[in-house]
Amino acid sequence: MGECRVSAEGQPALIEITGLTKRFGSFTAVDDISFNVARGEVLGFLGPNGAGKSTTMRMLAGFMIPTAGAARICGHDVQGGGVAARRVLGFLPEGAPTYPEMTVTAFLSFCAKVRGYTGAELSRRVEHAVALTRLGSVLLQPVETLSKGFKRRVGLAQALLHDPPVLVLDEPTDGLDPNQKHEVRTLIAQMAPEKAIVISTHILEEVDAVCSRAIIIAAGRVVADATPAELQRRHPSGRLDDVFRQLTMEAA
Amino acid sequence: MRNVFIIAGRELAGYFATPVASVFIVIFLILQGALTFNLGGFFDRGQADLNPFFTFIPWVFLLLVPAITMRLWAEERRLGTIELLLTLPITQTQAVLGKFIAAWAFCAIALLLTFPFVITVNILGRPDNGVIASGYVGSLLVAGAFLSVGSALSALTKNQVIAFVLAVAVCFVFAVASYPVVTDFLSRNTPALAEVARRIAVIDRFQDFTRGVVSLRDLIFFATFIGFWLYLNAVIVEQRKAD
Image 1 (cartoon, rainbow over the protein chains, first blue to last red):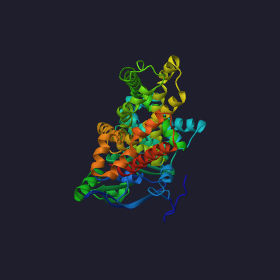
Image 2 (image 1 turned 90 degrees about the vertical axis):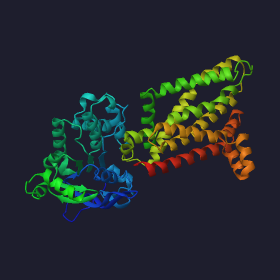
Image 3 (image 1 turned 45 degrees about the vertical axis):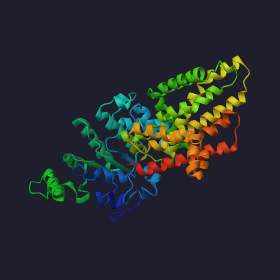
């Protein structure tokens, strides 16, 4: 685990994003976004489809090169110090991609090997991730034969394998049934005190359920950054749906 | 280096987890056998060597190697797994090398399975096995050269068909660069390029090996050729991974 910087509040800011911008030709997908996430925070990253959520997360994970700005994970620049940053990051990409022909065990073992584990430690890590995401019943099945919900959990297991201090999860509960959604939210809540977690979602009840803070983006810009309770007070109805609609429609 | 081999191991297991491996190896052996025995007149020549075998091998590779490389990066991009792979704590160079080494090892396995040719020719006569060995080294280097081209071009696109066609076309250019039809045309118009074409021709270099000549110049040529294309591969991945 890398050394972590300490922010003004005394809680270490494990994720620091400053002026992050991404342009595709003349189209600006992400426009000058800045925020920090400290240990213990679960940040809900909200916005309509196409608002720039996944683009921001890809830049945060070091996969996409920003047009301007920088992102740091535990103090490591994701571009300059890419490997060090990725070592302390657990990332679930959009759509939870996995190699279809591999079995769940083979896939998780591969990820664990790349993360430097060997022998008994490797098995222990894989078993632990499998237990957390309840994949025990499908270990020897090729990923392509699994249901959408299982595939998502394989992606999640991969992100949790190394118990990283920073988790970036792009739509972790998409495709799960209500029970599975509840399990994943419980899991996130359990891990929250020790980690900085960013989850993107467009399910607003999720924000209420697990997030300590929510950022709403629309057309690539941050339009709100507050606790769920504060956000709810911004609309007379007191419902997040209405707040979301009001904020994102204005920006569009 | 450890990461390179972990990635190569995963890739190589992937070939054998799908029908890719068996289809490729069977077609390769049938094609190579048919060409050697029929077109090459293996028995009629009455000579104890593998010249007919080595004459055809670059052309079989020209057709089949792009079938291996077309999926290397194009499929990762189509499935989105490239995002997973490149957000693991590895460098892009390690990913490029790992994939290349797996594909090359796979070609080496296919080549090893042509051992019945060597046995046959040794039963029928007394061939110069040194020449045969150097022919195999040359074949492996040609495969590596075509693989490096195909791998780089696969990173350009999400579409495997495009990756395949591009790789065949570019490999073909390098294969025939020293043929009179190319060099005559170039010498008439741009003589400087004709000289370049003669020097970069993969088939010419390969023919030295089939004559039993393993020269440092040819080895350096192949090392440079593969190194150049793999470097290009890493650059293309870096530039286009998220498109």
